Length: 103
Image (cartoon, rainbow, N blue to C red; front, side, top):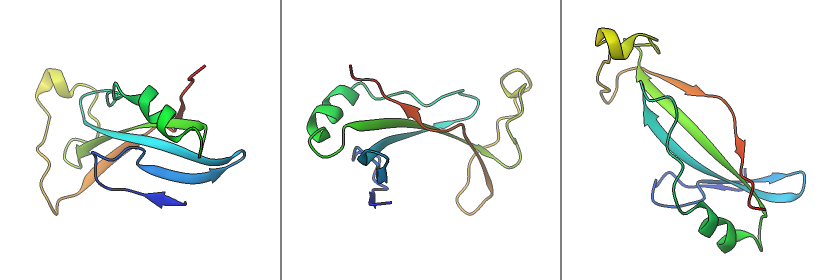
């Protein structure tokens, strides 16, 4: 890891050294029962701003839920959508980095 930012208004969120040199990741979070976090509309601008440093970029969608909910597949139907509270346990779902294609 080269650098990271926890401020959700700063993109890219992560920098690391990949096979071709510096690579970057834009991270967005979503609250379950959403299936994926929304990609920001400005990814092309992020790529243009940083292509001189690192041409390869990724998007990471991270889903959060309460441990009381644990990704209940019927959450929307049965109302099992527990609130998130500071200090309480969370469950996180991350399915990997999505390579962004700017060509």
